[in-house]
Image (cartoon, rainbow, N blue to C red):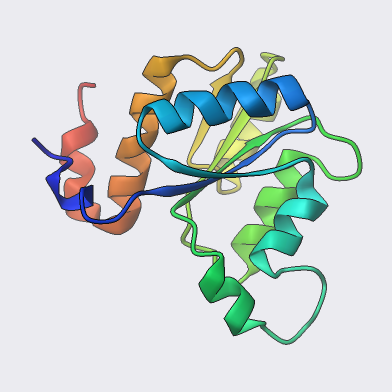
Length: 155
């Protein structure tokens, strides 16, 4: 019932993971839940897609093309961690309100706390489940309209 307002436009998720197997698995789970999915193999590729690669002036044409409703990223990746990617996204004026979800196969409470304290919307332990994907919709609804936050309570 609460998802009617999202029927017109498919939610777009940028999924970032250095593992091809994990990327394909996450993409399949998200597409199974009717998300539009763009994948990136690392943090730098994700930043390039978003138009956030060190160029101090904003590239509005690129960022308009890359409208994403959520970013889901692995924590441990070569070159740039998911945490570092999240920090760069949150520093940008174009994407700072976009929810960032961090995933990891390692259950390290201090890492999880740091990610959540510094701006991650959620932290999901791998392997990601269909129930985790259902939970993601709540984060997008909160992002789209804070009044929808009530829809997520108790689920």
